[in-house]
Image: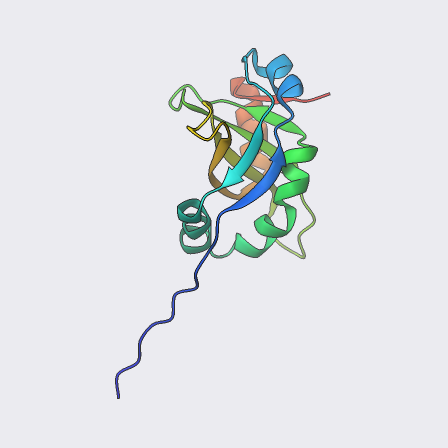
Length: 137
């Protein structure tokens, strides 16, 4: 008897409003206040490409968006930015979660999450030293 692999159906969902003023001040961008969404495809990407991070990212994504500790932008990805926040993890070496978001509004007038995963303290420190990650106040 052959078995079919079950692949969970993942839905798009609204994360909440982007804290545009805070991010604009830190990064010098001109983002508009709009909602942030995770598309069906991105939801699948996070689950399939970052399976070890999926549960913790999904449990914290609203808090990461509402109260990020850092905002950043890499020179090799000028079409996006990311928000980072320390998260509570049971005995893991990765202490922060990063949510990557498209810089431009979609045709629906929303910002789209492109990816989300956990990162280490050393990654945060390295990005801060390079000037790619700014503390939000």
